[in-house]
Amino acid sequence: MKILLSFVFLAALLGPAAAAAYEVAEKDIATLQADMAVGRVSAAELVRAYLARIEALDRNGPQLHAIIAVNPNAVADAQALDAERKAGRLRGPLHGIPVLIKDNIETADPMPTTAGSLALAGNVTHRDAPLVARLRAAGAVILGKTNLSEWANFRSSDSVWGWSGVGGLVKNPYVLDRNACGSSSGSGAAVAASLAAAAIGTETNGSLVCPGSFNGIVSFKPTVGLVSRTHVVPISHSQDTAGPMARSVADAALVLSAIAGSDPADAMTAAADTKKSDFAALAGASLRGKRLGVITATPGALPAQTAALLANALAALKGQGADIIEINDFTPPPQISTDEKLVLQVEFKADLNAYLASLPAGRVRSLSDLIAFNAASPRETILFGQNILTESQARGDLNDPDYVHARDELKSLATGTLDDLFGRLHLDAVIRPTNGPAVLTDRVRSAGYGSPDSASLPAEAGYPHLTVPMGYDHGLPVGLSFIGPAWSDGAILALGHAFEQATHARKPPVFLPSLEEGSALAPAR
Image (cartoon, rainbow, N blue to C red; front, side, top):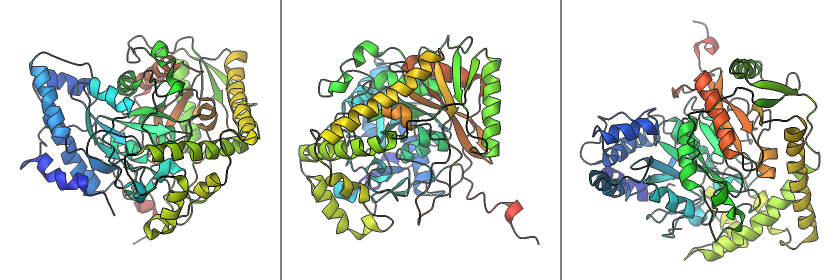
């Protein structure tokens, strides 16, 4: 079952002749802005062109299932911005640029915020999350909402990444039977397929950078506290953050500049206004003299082609003047995953109960209500159960001594481990492959990220983490991660931009049905 709201309006939004004359595929924000400036295209025509592409690729053709809802206000909002442009009023580099929002982030438009769950299918709050309000103030057009791993992949340890009860299964636009990762799967696939200029995703642990890597795009997890989490369906106030997903570092930086900032309702963002900057000021970005620590994998831990891609990336970095320091003695603290599980489950119970209670109306008002709803809804449990929800429900509250100990130990271990690397080796960043290539989607057994796990430590520490395409393994994208200390967001984006400009590794997706059906594996005739 789908939310039908968006597609009731889609034909009307497209009009009698969808604006397909202007080709949006692979165009960056600077090009879109330049074309609007000379009158080659309007913001309203951009919206219609992206809607036509959504119709062609998401609802038809390869049927990516990346979009849960399109915004019925999008064309009118774009027309208002066109009028502002005509009157000489420009809000900035995002003026008239269509952006997609992950469907665990509220917008004031008449679209539900569902987190992919049928339990929230009617959750129209008419509230803008502060990060969405910032996008609007910067001139962005909210194009629609993207599919995701249900409840941001915090429902079952056997989940199928990229699947939600509302949106179905997101497909990887490079190879359609491969996984788009999660939980920001729809945002990643949509950006890769040029269904919008950029998108917003969220991450607690890996949910921005893994879809970025699997879908061959740039994805940035900011320092936790740089971007507000108010009116975002929560998992953990310790680790949650929203972040930009785009086809270039420059575009991701433009979006981050718009959404970053303090929010009185989110105490974690108190320092954001003093830490934010023009993240898109990348003209002088350079790798010369930068010290990059590469975490070397155990021999055989990386697929051979991925290992070769890393070697090529290191050569490119060295060619640009970077100093590469091999880190071959890296071992994460063994108890850190146990601590994180406890922390996330306790915070999820507390934070989700508070969020659900804040909703204007709804069929579920607590985690226990949600568990009961899922148990009574065959669609919700057709592929996997809800053990993470039930385990969270059984946890104590935020004053529980075990939680307090785990929270403090987790933060200390994660920040201490990374700070030791940055300080002892005098590093500007830690680098490593973000993930291996995208795995096959398995509807019976849960998928595995593949080695290495680049996401956990920066997620647990709350530190910035950027993934940039570094090449392709049998046609499947693989990203290179740049991880920095707290509040080094601008410096990390600059490193990624310099690498991107030196390599130009990204290629557009080809919507191949399957690698396993290729000629080499076909029967001899």
